[in-house]
Length: 187
Image (cartoon, rainbow, N blue to C red; front, side):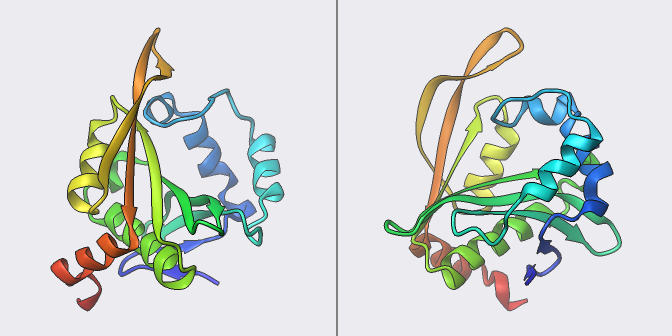
């Protein structure tokens, strides 16, 4: 099953994606702004990562983002799903700079939220960003309806210094208000 936005399709990663995913996995400019550990990745390790994914797991999903005439443009996830409390963690990465600022990221986040809230019945999504990633923080809070809910001090170590993690979140109620306010799915 694929998840459709207005302009993007979210699908499971495939072995045909190895080359591009591996290039992004080794791009220091991308990973400087994202959480987690970053080491040089071989094509084989990327292939093994894809082969080891279980998108049938109830704990979470990793998606490749496809856009018309562009193909694979990035990845998104919905992970650490807590079915009892009905929330999950979301993150997204757009690979090449030339796809940013064209509404594809917004469509991706809107599609993930619609899937999480309207298909899975979750009540909130959470995320965390490196404080130096001001573009993403602004994007999520100004374009996608998310709110800054807090900070974790000195959470990320980048370039010989520590940065805070900015905690963001959105509720199902706020998502539905955003859809009504913007008419996003109407056009």
